[in-house]
Amino acid sequence: MMQEPERIHIEGEVARLLRPAEDGRMAVEREVRLSDLAGAVAEGHRADRTPLLPEGTRLYARWRHTAVLVMEDPPRVRRLRWSAKTLKSEGEYTEYSLAFPFVVYLVGFHQMDFEEMRIYFRTAPLCGESDPLYFSNLWNVQAAESPLARCRACLRGRPEGLDQPVGEQVVSLIEYFWATGFNRDIEDNCFDRAKRRDPRIATLEAWEAATRVDPLFPLSVAWEPVGLSLGEALDHWRRHGDHGRKIESAADVADVMYRLRETR
Image (cartoon, rainbow, N blue to C red; front, side, top):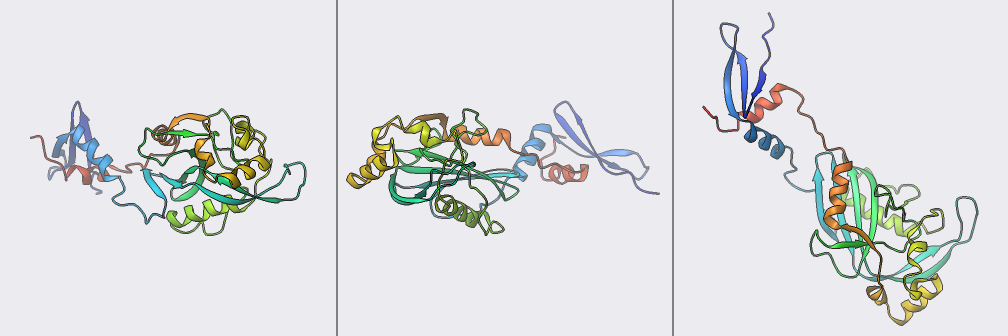
């Protein structure tokens, strides 16, 4: 005869582990506070350590199935390819040397598979989660009002090497973003949104000319606030991600209960 499996009985603020006794009846094997049990389950599913992180990582956040790496690049001049082509038209690519402020990337993964990347500007390095984020002026980044799409980067395909650890994936993804070339595929893009904020970034030619005069001029541009701090952007990701690693059975809960102090 198959033995009746263990059970977890929750009543008020107490959780009890029940197991079959010799007489066949269910008996209380262990009794703990529900708050202790809930805290231990949550703690037990936190990552004990982060993966090896690449240079430029400022923060690593993980919520069970979802992980986000916050990366930051210092100001620099980049050689970029740009074309006036759109999804409906063709165009040749031209190279420009353009100065950038601090660039912040939020690179998200679901079960360690790349999901999406969001890109922001700042005029100073990140110091804490309360720091505000600003719109970039990049063509292949969405300027949509929808929080689900705002500042999302269009990668136009995927680079090789996404079967590697997340740290290596992040490096490949960022390099791929800058190397693939920029165009007007996204109608509601961050370049068109930003170009009226400062004459030095109104056109590519003006941007390149200002770069020759002062490679650090982007630090004095009044970039448009996104309306989110770094912490708020991460909270938004957490709320809309999949965070529910399930406890599959009473046996899983029982394993946690044996590590807790009993109430009786």
